[in-house]
Each structure stands twice: as structure tokens, then as C-alpha cells.
Length: 343
Length: 274
Image (cartoon, each protein chain N blue to C red):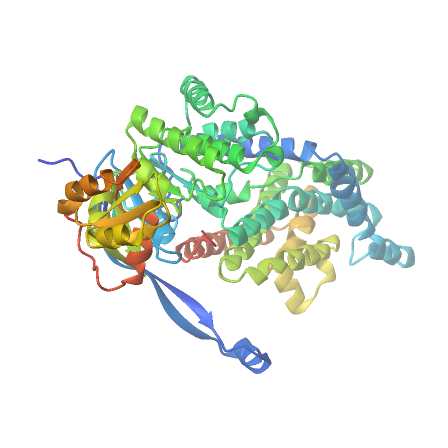
């Protein structure tokens, strides 16, 4: 019998009631006595399973329902309908034994005490999560070393940079050794070097502890580097479930072949290359073609034959472009699991 | 005791006490970062509370007693008032305000993700140790007044004093929880903490000053007067069994209503921003 999934959602719904009124003084006065409410469907009939130890990227535009879903899975929000199960628990009941096994890290919210060194918040969490002192010291040493924050944890949080603070937030969230980790935009606003450091830390944490991981991020590099599977959600609905490769092939089936030439390309050459595929870029001495995978060897051979050909690249379309295209084609790609994603 | 499924399993009491202790430690450390807090929150708070006694002092200059309470009895009452207002200023008000701020910014999420009762987390979220100066001053005044009045309370009377003081504190916390629960729905209701602070000033006066509906309100609805008058009366044995029972029933009822309101508020929690 297959292992029970770590996370299981069945037709999960979340609706919010929000007040609405026309702009202006009169509608504002009228709203004092009679307010009009509308129901917003943040998450609609969301269903998927995540196996133990899996790393899943949760993608979608702003307001797609990603964070709402994570909050329901962490037990912060009560679902309006459907069922959610995490490690065999119903998250909304917020049983202590459930909360001791999960963690939610939010890039835009902090739990560290502003005026105190992060070590003081770590100690508070040690007590709150009832972590034995020896284990606490072991985990703290491990994470401080991985993140290289030996001195940082001793300084008041208000004096730390955004990246240093986020590193400390991660330690605070992981000291109790969660088996399921929800990461909501953990690298938001950070420079490339800091993004890389956080990403490496998460990858290493997963390698060492085998935690189940769901990540939302606006940085596609985060998702591409950390997640073996992605779930695309838009307007509260699941639009895709599968690997990044499967998504790219589905949305942008053509591969991009690019090369630099030692000499400027004449018009005749360009026209000839254009017949091989879609011309994506044509600078004076550079050319990029989007071609069907079956034609890649033929195109590569033709491009390498160009005078002074160098820097040949064959790649899938960038994930950013794929996502942009996916959301511009709403309704076309619906709810279906990816080619590898029917789980 | 359970909230939204957060049951008190084995060892829960120990863990909750440890949580409160750890939170007090963190709040105290944070307070120590700002020495100016000693003056603004401690000494000024005490001066403010004592300043509220001026009407009573003026009244005693024109008559021998206020509604049957002589000058030293008023000092005794003032002692208990300072104890209650000190607890409010050091523990209840900061925790409720801090939790409300967390609701507004969405960081209440982190409190609710702890494997402990969310209400205990909220009610220990902040603490202002400087305001304990009021509590200490209150204790000193109560002891001095007891000596001056030549009261020699029996063990039973001291037991009743502990009981009615506990009822007063439970009622105080319950009112704080009701305000906190209401603010889940409408953040504008945060101003209710100021209303509560203002209402607390009525506890300067002996309960016998109030008549009719006001007496009922300050005894059963917002039992601030009971928090100070009953402890003072218990020391002299002037507190009847029916009044003690009334204080217990009021405190339990307020606590139960507050707990229900809290559970309801949690169900509707929308977790501000992402």
C-alpha cells in the first residue's frame, strides 16, 4: 500500500465576505447604516495530494489564492468547504501535536522581537515548542553554521538587513524541526546573492531532514532550483500540476536555439534561417530561433556552419515567459494535471 | 479549557506556564532596552492614577465620609484600585493592544501557529514591567490602611479577599478578551481599550456611591467597582455571602462569554495581508 500523502486537499474552498461601496460622500454615509457585502471566492474546489518529502512550487499571479491555501493548510484560516488534511490532521482544528510538526515562513511578516537579538526569540520558541535544550543547541548550531549568522543572531533585530533578518526568521521557524514546511515568498525583496543563500539553505535543510516543502515565490529561479513539481493556481483554481519541464513543453513546446556569429549576418542568411523556425532574436551578429524539438539537431548543424559560429545555446523558454503566456491564455489550459502530474 | 480544538493535553499546564514565563522574560528584556519607559509608563502612570483621587480628597474635605467610607477606608480602597489599575496597565492593556496590532499587521499568524492555546499566547503577548510600580504602591497603601484601621482579618476573611480579588482580575481579563475578540471583526474597535481605561476610573469610588442602574452596571456588567470595593470590605468582614457569590458568578459568566467570543473570533480570522 502506498504511503499516505503528507498533504491532501479535496475540493477545498475559501470564500471571504468583503464590503463594497461606490466612491463618494453619499455612498460613504449610506454605508454607515447599510453596508453591501460581496462574496469573494479566493480558493475554488482545489484538490491535490503531496507525498512526504516532496518539494512543490506553488505558482500563480497575485491574488490567485496561493497564500490563502497555505494559510488553510497551516491551520490559520478555516476552509469554507471541502477537506484539507496535513500529516493526518485537520489543520483548522489546530491541535498542538499538529502545530508542533509544521511551520509557516512568511517573507512579508516577522515573528522576531524587533528590539531584541534573534537569540531571545529562539529561546522563546524553544520553550513554546518544548524543544529539549540539547536538541535545541544542536539544531541552532547547525542552522547558524549553514546560514553563516554566528554574530548576526546576537544583534538587535532592528539593526539587521532584510536578508539577515530573513535568515533569522528561518531559524526561528525551523528550530522545532517541522516535518512540513510552508514557505510564502521567503526571498521577496532580496538581492540575488541573498536569494541564493536562502535557496541553498532550504535545499540543504530538505536534504538533511527530508521535510515536505511547499514554496510560493515570485522568483522563478527559486522554484526552478528547489521544486521538482509545480502547482499552478489562478483565480483560486488549479491550472496545472506537474514538472516544470512538462509545463514549459505544454505552453511553449518550441525550444530556443541561439548562436553568435563571428561576422555580421546578411539578409539572405537571415531569411534562410527564418525558414527553419520562428526568429526570436536577430541582432547584427546574433540569432535565436524557436524550433520544434525534432528539428533541433538540423538547426544546430545549420547554425554551427555559420562563419565564426560560437556560444551555441539550446534551452527551453524562460519560466517567466512561460508563466506570462500561461496567464494570458486563461481558460485554455484548464485544471488538468501535467503530463507527469496525474497523481 | 479548549479553544478551536487546542485542547489541554498532558503537560499542557506546565507548557503554558513556561510560555507565560518566557513571554514575560522577552517583554521585560524589551522594556529594559528603553529606560525612558520607567518614567513614562511607571512613574507617570502612578501619578496619573493618584491624580484621579483628587475628587475623592475634595469630597472628604467637605464631609466625614463618602457613602459611609471614612478617610482610611478610602486609602484602603485606593490601595486595591492601584493594584487593579497596575495589573491593567502592566499586563492586560499591553497584551490586548499588542494582539490588536498583530491582527492589523497579520503577524497574529505566528502566535496562532504555536502549539499552545492562542488566547494564552495573546494575553501574554506584551508586558510593561514599569507599571508594576502602581501595584507595589497599592499593596503598600492597603497594608498601611489596614494597620491604621486596626483591622485584624481572620484567615477566612483573607481567603475571601483572595477570592474576590481573583474574581476582579478574571473579570478584568474577560473584558479585555471581549474587546480583543471584537477587534477581529472591526479593527476600529481598538479604541475600546481607552474606553475601558476610562471606565476603570470609576473603581476609585466605593460601590456604595452608585445607585440604581449604575450600581447594577458596575457590579455585574463591567464590575470595576467590585474589583476594589469588595476586597476592601472583605478585610473588615463587611462583605456578605451573597455579594461574594455575586462576584464569583459575575466573573465566571464574563469568563465564559469571553471564551465563546474568542472562539467565534478565531473562526472568522482572515489573517491580514500576505
